[in-house]
Image 1 (tube, rainbow, N blue to C red):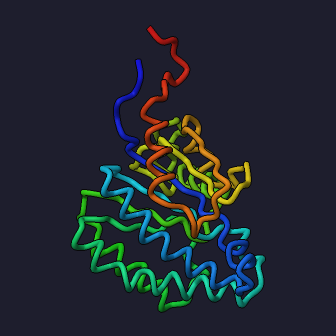
Image 2 (spheres, rainbow, N blue to C red):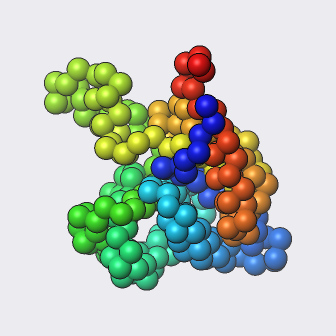
Length: 230
């Protein structure tokens, strides 16, 4: 039976900011700034279409190996994004959460993250998750250690609840922009049955038309989860 439902959870690997800037003879951080603008546009579009949860891969643990100037610029942009968008999140019922190790952030950014999470924790209309200093393998290791420390037997249910996305459904759709065909250590456990879409569009150029095409394709997809269709 064909699905006639919207995806409940979309996850996006936002790739291509640096190459977008390079093609315009601009510094990489200019591309990251335009990428943040795209987050504003696409997150609004996703939620306006009735999707409940959006998870964005903003900064990986491996990205720490990039030049210090680029890394510090990304951290600064993240803080500005939270300050700018928190009022809109509150107005639109969007619960905000950062998934990853934020201990590397300075005190000011940690406070901004904690404040946004606290102020939006009771909101339920939509969920916006930002994976920041995140790695799928590290997420799995943390979950295993958490269950072990608590003396909890690992099952698929308890393990899923111990992950950074605990309490959320797995992503129905995973999108990677930028032309690469890999998942780059993103939500390794969670995307076991996700529909994965790769697009050559660089993240700053990703738009509503392409988003709508992916959603429309998903709605035609047979999702059997290993079962035989009757």
